[in-house]
Image (tube, rainbow over all chains, first blue to last red; front, side, top):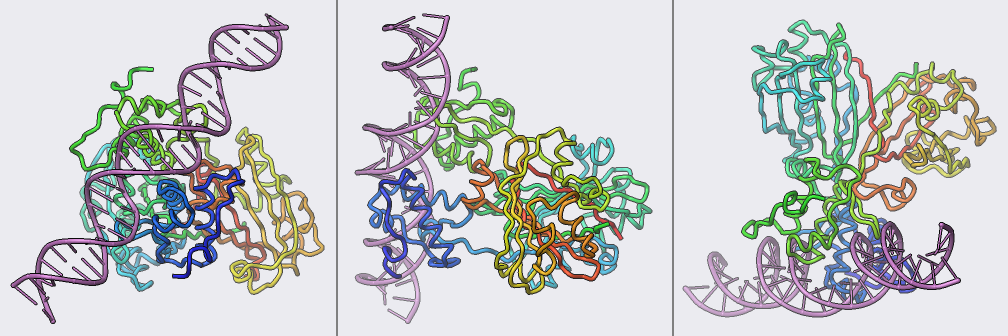
Length: 261
Length: 261
DNA sequence: CAGGGTTACTCGTATAGACGAGTGGGCAAG
DNA sequence: CTTGCCCACTCGTCTATACGAGTAACCCTG
């Protein structure tokens, strides 16, 4: 490695910017400028302690800022590394178009295969349960619902988990209530059952994950989640499904096409 | 206040979960259960030091977890408070529909007024500049562009800032190059100039903000941003505008309506 | 009573030190 | 050469202490 002073500069004792922020600033700038590249190891805490002449806690404080920004991550026993940006999956707004359902396989599998990734689905769980206040409202005052939970992985990495909720009068006893909903997924089954889909509504939020979400999606520190709630309406205007999805924000770009009319 | 033990429980020394995580867990749970309500003050560091019998740094470490999750925020000299959730602004996908442009006022102003909020726009800057690689690609290999920057505030709080980029051959010398683009905004001007809008493409990402974004949007710790890039296409398929928007994620819910066809 | 200063309490920043635990390379024994 | 241990280096956790600085309430003074 090149010497630290050539990359990192010195502190300004007259500045009223806190020392640990100054250090974080210098590291951030070095990363932005490409002095430290993706996946590369930053100087160790001990090295920075020596370089700046500060205590270890101060250096750790600096790292914790960068970690919170999602710029770096620490590996116990190894070092602190510039976080590599995983390839993002682009979700087009027409991914639920009817023509895509004719294929048979689920949208996730088809798209991942096309992108050359290895897709997996796990944590499959299908059960009847009490509807939450929010779900009940969206589905039009139902009490109990069929819930289909699953988690999606791309090349071994969990990227999203989702729960579909359907009114019991629609789903109970159908293939929708089976672990495998069959070719084309539950939307194909809904249409076969006479619930012709008219449109979807999607609501998108972004926020920091709960500890449970961090665990399920194996999220690094400083990675938000995208929370997407999609409601499917049939041609009679009835909400026939609500899909609640939480996605690792560093794994997705959502793309929508809107008419200008 | 009720006594701490009745709200917070004790540590488990046999657990291999770090003490500061256990404390964070207990505080988080107390918040989730509503034992501490929005805007309410948490026990001070000193109180928690005494209650748990740990050092102050350990307590601060716990707070820093919750801060990173966006659950609490500290105010110097006052205390640590449960972060209140500001009301969110819902953005419907038809907000650029032609019929909304007839009104005169910009979409932001109209919607905010309707919601009973006080809208403001500032940091207005209109200038010609070199197109970034990304913008150039989106606009079809232009070198220089007209950039219109502005920041939006709701009831005094900055909630988003945006930059519109337009090819010079379209915008130069028109009212689009003026600080005030006139009634209906630049989309109305584009149509008057013969660039009839056909559709928009929106790309959505979520990530942690840069320090500059934290400053511009006065973001609290643990609040991600939603990064939205909208490209407007005219009826000839040409990209006539790219709008790059960064929004405070705790201030917005994006809503899209998609046909099922 | 009005004004201003003191004071107690709050979080912010920084130091110094200790021990634990994961990682990986080198060395020694088999 | 292979195996296995040891050690150096890494970050993780925690303690104890010190001083700075923002806040707000109280009290004293004029």
